Structures are given as C-alpha cells and as structure tokens.
Image 1 (cartoon, helix red, strand yellow):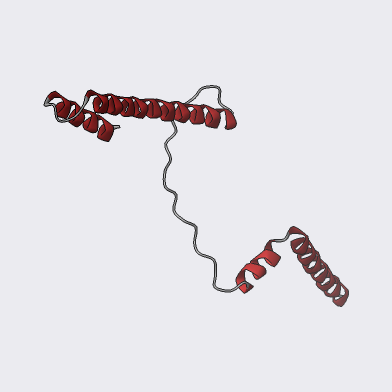
Image 2 (tube, helix red, strand yellow; image 1 turned 45 degrees about the vertical axis):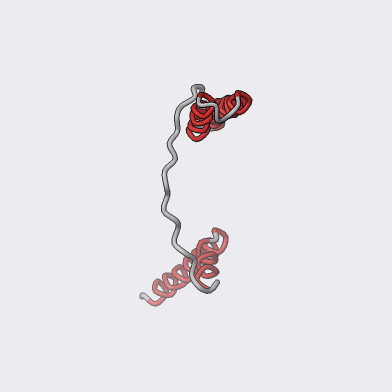
Length: 118
C-alpha cells in the first residue's frame, strides 16, 4: 500500500504541474483505494482465521496467537534396519510375548532350584 500511496502522490504532483492529466490522478486514486480495500480484507481474513483457530482448540474467545519456530526433528538413520528393530522392540504384543517367555524361563529355573534342594 505504501508503494501505491507514493505513486498517487507522484502522479498528483505531476498533475499539479500539468505533466499528467486528472484522469491519471483518478486512476492512481482508484489504485490506492483498491490497495486499502485489499489491506482491510486481509486484516479481516486474519481475524477470522484467529477466531477459527480459537474455536478449533476449544476456546470461546479469539486471541492473538504467535507462531514460533520449532527445531526440525533429527534426520532418520541411513538405512531401515534401526527403525525396524525399534519397531519390533516397541510393539506391545511382541513385548508381552517376550516378557511371558522370560517369566516362563524364570519359573522353570525356580522350579529346578526348588527340586534340587533336599
């Protein structure tokens, strides 16, 4: 909008010195008014977006939110093997089977120890 305002001022000055016509001034004025209208629409859209965001996160009042930069996550390993191993390690059903196997092994060791004692 500042550029359009500056252009309007320049054309107005040229028209005062009879180097531009009043039609050029009118076109520059329309262009400036269009810029002001676009700015108002952009500000209105911003306020609507804030209200929609507030409604989406469950608040009743619109607030000014400030976006902050978050650091990027660490890059993935070069191959899939570490991620596959971690996936197998963190699967609940596999962890349950592993723990059940360990429990059975410990129970068998305890049984063996109890039977070996006189």
